[in-house]
Length: 110
Length: 118
Image 1 (tube, rainbow over the protein chains, first blue to last red):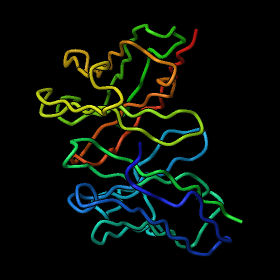
Image 2 (cartoon, rainbow over the protein chains, first blue to last red):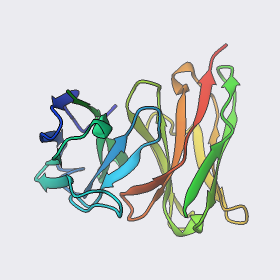
Image 3 (tube, chains in turn purple, yellow):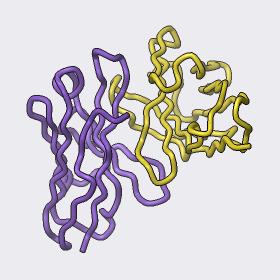
């Protein structure tokens, strides 16, 4: 179902940096802005990044986003135990007129 | 403070119908695009539908097109999802979400669980 591809999991030690890739196509990421969502265990998703690289109020600058062509990347620096969660990219798909989520990436803090 | 509260989830038999509600507070629902998203427990997020342009425009995922209908009631400041011809694969947690830019789901409800089983 998902048309945006993410790695299933990434991990790093506390204080380290992780990056999560999100690969799409010309009709979604290539044509529209990307958002990222964080879902802590047992909770609803929360907006983390919008418009490719903007952070909502209250989101620390340890979280960053970027986009190039048909791919996007989420970066988390200074990894903390509280960052253990599932992360999803998403974008509108112009050709199908649907909103598409990525496959999701589980972040583990060793 | 913006809040969304879903309700209506329950156990229902295959082939049945169910209407989910999403009560909004802290903002006027019809001023923003509003989406429904679901998640099978332990699996990823699946976008289902959006209501935008003050209720004039709707879009649906292929998986629910023709079976689900999104709507709203401005007097109740509430979003709805009418689900017909339910299937076991529709079993999931259903979230409503407010869209602030047309492609950014910036507020989410806590979700309501729908179980389709005989």
